[in-house]
Amino acid sequence: MGKKGSVIMAFDGVFAHYMLAEINDQLIGKRISKVEAINDTDYAFSLSSKMVLVLSADKNFSHFRLSKKEFMHTDNHFGNILKKYFASSFIDNLIQTNNDRVITLIVTKNDELGYPKTYKLVFEFTGKTSNFIILDSEDIIIEAYHKHFEIDTRIISPNVKYELLESTKINPFTLASDDTILNENIYEGVSKLLFSECCYNASLLKTINQLVSPTLIIGKKVNFYCFDLKHLDGKRIKYDDLSSLVEGYIDHSNSSLNENADEKLAKTYCIKELEKAKSKLAKQNDELRIAKNYASLERDAQLLASNIHLVKPYQEEIKVIDYNTNEIVTLPLNTKISPNENVNYYFNKVKKQKRTVDALSEQIEKTKQEIIYLETLLNQISIASNSSLKEICKEIGLVKPDKRPLKPLITRYIDEDGYTILVGKNNTQNNYITNKLAKATDYFFHIASYPGCHVIYNGPLNDDKIKLVANICVYHSKKTSIMAVDYVQVKYLKKVKGESGSFVTYTNQKTTHVNGDIDYINKHAKLVN
Image (cartoon, rainbow, N blue to C red):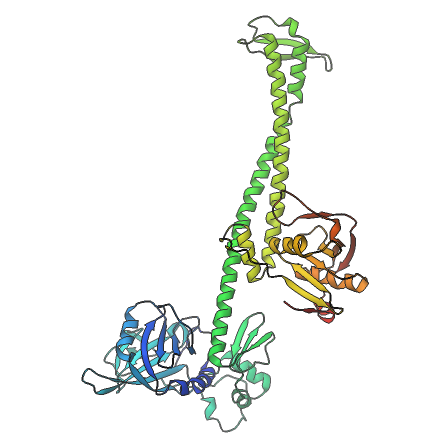
């Protein structure tokens, strides 16, 4: 093939080579009982063995695999065409073109008169240019997923003979010796990812001819391959076969997408609410400043009360002397009410202003707490796992709560002496471990004056334990600098009533300083979940 589109390069020609070696025995001779469209790019070929051959032309991850899953199906035009030629057929072969990202499914199907006919489905899994092309026994194009356009000087159109563009690269499986210098990737079906591994091993053939060991590698990026890639750092997850590996990668990717969606949803909500709360606080402070200006109003009321004997009926205003400042003050009067009622009117206005100040002061404190709560949520979102994000979304009402409340998924460590360290990373988890699981004699750890994790330790304290648990507290709060960590027995905690979140106050605390050293944590404690 010529120029390729964008694709998850882990599923390259070498990966396809080993995938075919793995699944062909399960395919050849099997009857395709039905063909259905999963979506616009993915198609499922159900076999008599209750396995499903999945061909995906997704531009971001074009591939093929065997699956035992049941898929939701849709109805589309190309899916109906595939049914016509491949449903109720028998698989003769599934072959790869050299070591390229091209496979051909060859089937035999009886026509209406009962005569066997051969059909082929060429699957070019090349990312953006991925295509399904249906051929007859003479390689004449019957139909194509993408047609009536030119690819690499080829015309993909019905009634035209299908042609493969000869590759200018070398099929690595045809090499007899490994004496090549790995300066440039001139090998067909060898992705950049695999070529980096070849360079790391200083051998092309040793790398591509090793035993299959399906491996998912979770590091800064998620990678997978038909054998372990030693040049990549990250957590390894092993699978029994390549199809399971591909499905594991898809499940992990979908989980990550869901996590990102939950994170975006929760973060957008909190930022919007935080902006509203800050705007509300600014208005409340302005109103409070105006309301607090009741001192002159109180002075006017007292001056009028002292000079009530000077007020005449229907008088619109009165001028009196303020002996504290020796200035003349003009007091407006309501001519429709009596002088005494005017005095009461002034004093009532003072009382109302004072009530307004008290109410605004209370509202301002609530708004400040709301801001702290939202800022705490944003911090929790930044350190949250997928399950933790779900809990946060439920807490703030973005998703429906469970009919039966589930226990939060708590991070647990066991130290060298068998004592448990519980870590809460959001309000749901914090409240659960602090208010439900912790005993009065357990110890509570929290970064001082920072919206971090709650950590509970159920063992006796000494300097080493304090250092360990404090490091866990800082590490899971995603801080890398030296932080002050308060620690105190749970019996000295007091939950702040009437406030959202997991806020507590405490007394009798002591403080240590650590930097969240993960190596120290791993040396002295075991993460159990």
